[in-house]
Length: 320
Image 1: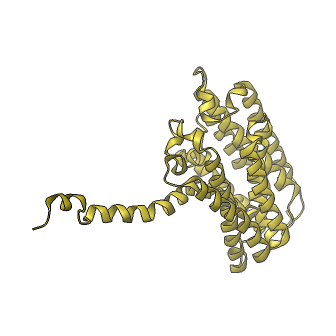
Image 2: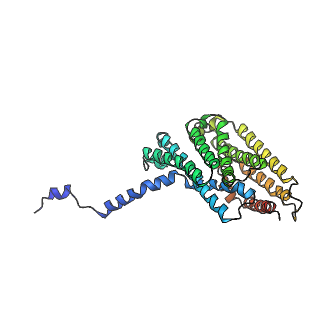
Image 3: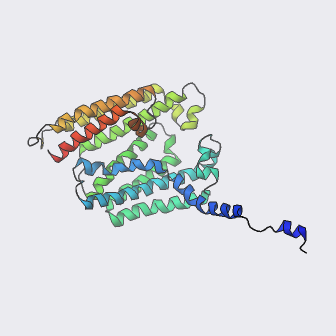
């Protein structure tokens, strides 16, 4: 007869043990995916901005090339998220919300996050050099270096942090044009750059309003948020909105190529563009413009205005 103590010391495997092992097998890949911030990938659709502005989205080759650029830029952005979370893991564990991030929670080991981030940071520009052109590779490499510098130091420098985040959006908008060899209009660059600054500053302004009067709350959200005054952030998003509208109107009022259009689509597109900026400013002023995509999806008049602008702008680009 078997010794009862032996049976207690060496129990047979159970289904629960097997399930736990299976969960561990998928925990790491899932954690890496979550650390790469899939919800943020929608920002990388900006790679289509320059080709769309030039009316070049009319062939399978262009769409395929932009799909490649989207994947490469997503890999570059994911590399930054991985390295950032690995670096901030210790601080994130003490944060009420960030402690749930996979690296801080221990789902993804810090060395693994560093290693995967480094691999993606190298593969993204290398893939761009092989599949696109040197200009695209250089821009993606510059994006990675700039964002890593932001994670290490620049996010703690007043004003520079706003410029870096804004430049990241501008690079997204530029990279599609570089990949396809499309010249980038000065009006496109000015409008996109200051439009991005408008969104970034409005988001910071909303965060500042939410944390006003709560000592230490600003530092929990962003390292420099407590250093900015609400009045300054309000000035920045109002200035950026004004410059973006002015640049767009100057483009729309150019007569080049407009003589053969059925209607003055370029000039007409100014109306929904300005209305959209003014409508978004309502949410910025209220302090509820924390996530631009949420504002657009939640507010039907703003979404309708955006669709009207796209229709008129598209008509101007194709020359109807």
